Image (cartoon, rainbow, N blue to C red):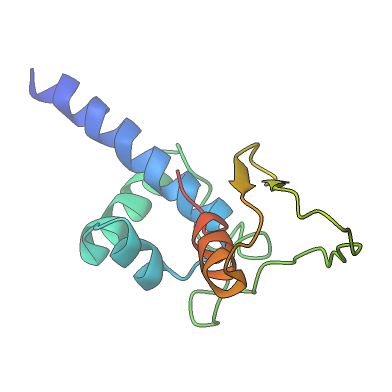
Length: 123
């Protein structure tokens, strides 16, 4: 029974670590965002590498973010809205397929905050 529980934990931490690799966040920020223990993260990363489930931390360092460097800001596409006599609602479709419908007369600052929040990596 203990072996089965270990395999479930292993799978869970493997998902966390792969999500971190895609996130481009430093480990501390990733763990804070996902409410994970930072020491447990390092321990499981080492264990999974030793078990051969993950490549060793140094082997993929070129493909993984530098944990001491701040994350690279996301890239956004600039858009210009043409003047129109009748205001119409907008629909913004993000890369992950999520659509945000914005009514006419929206507050631009609130929309910017919402898009920044939705643009954060998640698993």
